[in-house]
Image (cartoon, rainbow, N blue to C red; front, top):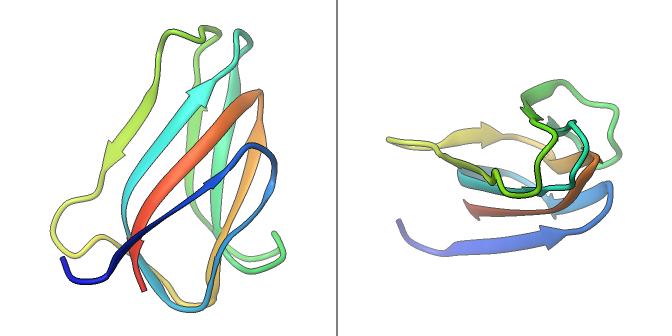
Length: 93
């Protein structure tokens, strides 16, 4: 894939502004069950595209490759982290 970029956050907020194709999601949970939510939005109010729930273990990583052309985000990529220590996404856009 051409022009692949990465963005990382350790709290809820904006990962990327503008159109993007998400190709990989990586998350590090805390010791308490939680969730990682990605929205097609720049402010956290858009449609949920992905919700990944984590188990109550900081030894079980969240790793999700998205095959083919990835997942399309039209407006931006916003992440909401609940009991997740950090999130890194790889995308083209």
